[in-house]
Figure 1 (tube, helix red, strand yellow):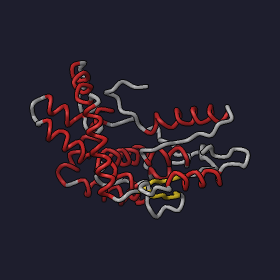
Figure 2: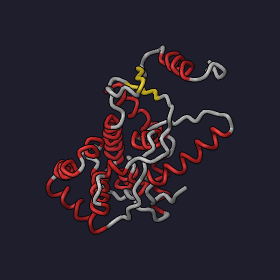
Figure 3: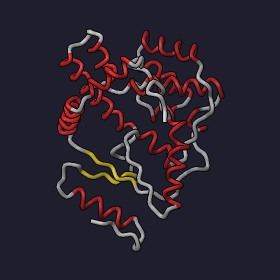
Amino acid sequence: ILDPSERFGLGLFLPLAREAAADITARGKLPIVAGGSGQYVWGLLEGQKVPAVPPDPEFRAALEREAAENGAQALHDRLRRVDPVRAEALDARNVRRVVRALEIYRFTNKKPSELAHDAHTVGDYLVIGLTMERKALYRRIDERVDVMMDAGFLAEVERLEQAGYPMGQGALDSPGYRELGLHLMGELSLEDAISRTKTQTHRLARRQYTWFKPTDLRIMWLDAADSGMPEQAAELVSAYLPETNPVVQ
């Protein structure tokens, strides 16, 4: 869909996801959205609209400097003063999204939260959330990073660098690419690069609770460590689907 150096955002995701969901529905099937990024999931289900505001590199750079000098929380507080609803939905540490919200406000003179919805709201959906004890979740993340390394993650990063793609830009800003890029440049040992990748992924997992809150009544939460979880999920889906479409066990 995109070059590795390009950033895939909500504005690109929503029309593609809606087109895919419409195609699946037209074939008599049920679309299943697996996430992942809560912003993307709720954006699709609740009909979020991305304002057509062009990026302003100078304004963004000024805000990023402000965050670097005064801290990310100061920038988040600035957003809270103009749009408390949008600020509540964003983690203060996600400077890029806070900057984008302020950019939209500056360009439109309207609160981003008030521009966020259109007629594409999905009227009926079931959301199942999986939760897990924090230490167990981190163990699984660490094991997954180890599997990725064994499967050739370092070689993938090396090929991308040799092809001229800068680590830390666009899709290559994901956990692991920047860290392994620093290792290939001789600035980090492989052990430290792997350790930082795991830590960054832990942080990413924690940030998802900004979008998937344990108190959110729209979400049917299940314990992923419970041996009966698959059956519990199947029961929820069976209750949601028409009787003519039972869950295949």
